[in-house]
Image (cartoon, rainbow, N blue to C red; front, top):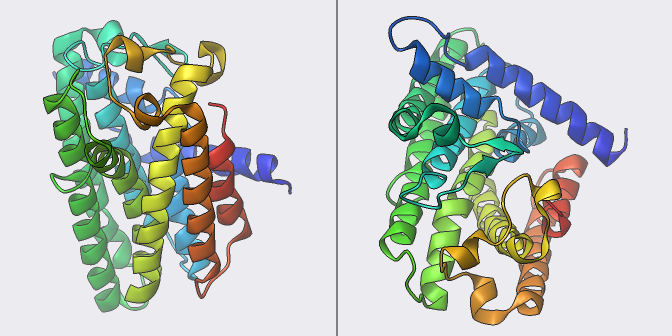
Length: 302
């Protein structure tokens, strides 16, 4: 199977896993659940749960304990997108080729949907303990799940994604330094990629040195991914990206591209990608698809 075919197959598999964990649209809270599922079912690359499952497989992981964490990570990611698109933040009308959640359901319900999805992510991740009961060694399984939960909370919290979002919002429209931009990119974007690579390995029983290297890979790839995203905001087109082009300029947002230009951005992406792949090749495990996926992220057009 070539890379594109495997990517499609893995994306379809992740979508199937996600559907198993989406909340049922019923009860007096049905409308906000519909908004939650609208966001989750809008498509997307599913990179984070895909990476998580890859590292789980790379270190010999078997079984269903990975499923709740895959779903939880994508829920956390989508909660951030719902809030990012709001009028108070980026004020975007399109996401993944269709109306953003606040355009479809209204701003109040979109705010609630983002909150609900973030909390429901942790409800979902805790369901991994139920899967551990079926394992041959539940004691070590519980320990791994607990560590994976710690990483999930840390990488999505004030020292991770939410910390980056907060810094981004606080300095909205202001001129930022390179260090500030790098902090926002590494936390807001990179932290969940780091966590995804780490959690898969943790659940499979990888040692701490391997997990640390995966964190380094995630940091470099996350930063490269965000710089590439900023490049596409300048050079891409809406048909390919599925979202409006030029929002960074309209919102007077300081990015690596606004500081140093497109060519410097491309060079930085290349440097970060080469370093990440070098670290990947030093791991005590191999996964051809994951390596190629990390490489492809630097040259993506959407």
